[in-house]
Image (cartoon, rainbow, N blue to C red):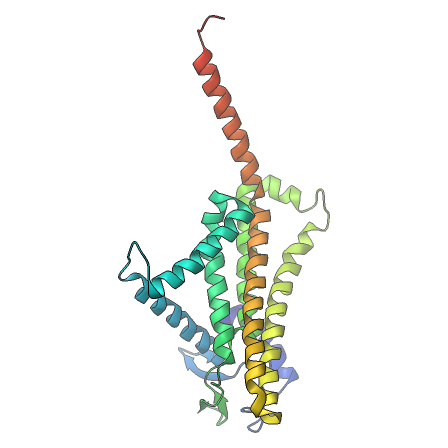
Length: 280
């Protein structure tokens, strides 16, 4: 699915930067390399890496929750710490009800992006395979260094935000909000996914190019750049997740107004029922 969401980007990059057997295993190129096909659908190394990261996250979740304890230790304590941190962030941003509603989505996006970024920082470019064209290509590549993946995630987040805003305002209210009070509101629907996808892709792809270059120029100081890229990977995961959280919060802010109005009416009705028939 991620590959089909951004097929246009791959074709555009492939035309602009043709690959050769010499450059396939050197500096990373914008178009992800095709490893194999599944029922006629090409699978690139970035998509394959995304599958590996998802499998790692699922395995970690299973191992951490198979023996739950009231006093967590070890892996359970580590994952509960991450969940508690995101619960606190989402509740401070959106309130308790909406925060707990969207926390699983935002936290999952954060963990997937973080693990994808850090997985791409590992020295895994040496593992290669010869594809159908006879070119040796790396098996693993950071999923976020492929614009197809980042564009798919950005489109999904913005589509969810627009869906919940439509659900909150209703069709007429949503259509009215596209033009009033801000007539340029509809442009946000197109600029937000572009900003999210290109920011994440640009930073992670530039980091891979930097590591590949420094491995050739100054391999003895690679640990400095690896540490830098680990930090950049964390920051980019936080930026994508926090911006997605803000967009979801803005889209559903009207729900709080409806809840407060309903709570106010409920309190007034209870007070009226309590004082009904009492002499003054």
